[in-house]
Image (tube, rainbow, N blue to C red; front, side, top):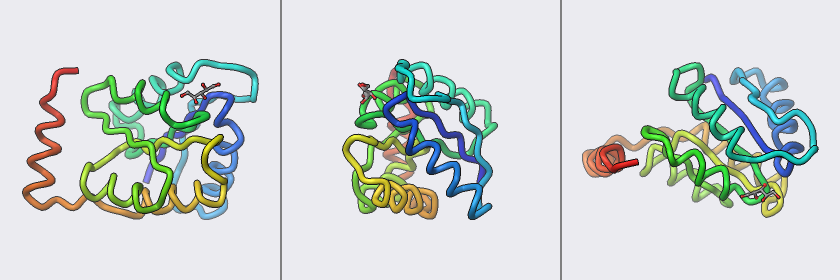
Length: 147
Ligand code: RB5
């Protein structure tokens, strides 16, 4: 799978950790849209870069990391076709994929340990959408909402 990954300064360390994990396992290829240091930046800038990679089909799935995951999710969810979910547990990550067909995982580096974040990332990427009629109908309705 092609993963686009981005962060602001507050999520930079976990972004680098995740990239190392992806390089080590060689299961996924990774597009890094920045930021490239812990110098202060603005999370919407990186959310937009990641969204563009997804919407132009350069990536299949996205991971966005900031201090809480919240700012990244608010920014990403402004775009039609994006379903970004902030997840602080593997259960949330699994359900975000199963029920919501979430295509961006948002993580808060200040709120989640790296060990937990890695479990969340793995769960999110390993879980497929449950395409039963009721979930498809609800996601279709999401896609039709004004943005
Ligand atoms: C940066 O200080 C912080 O506000 C940002 O990373 C994020 O948590 C916003 O939602």
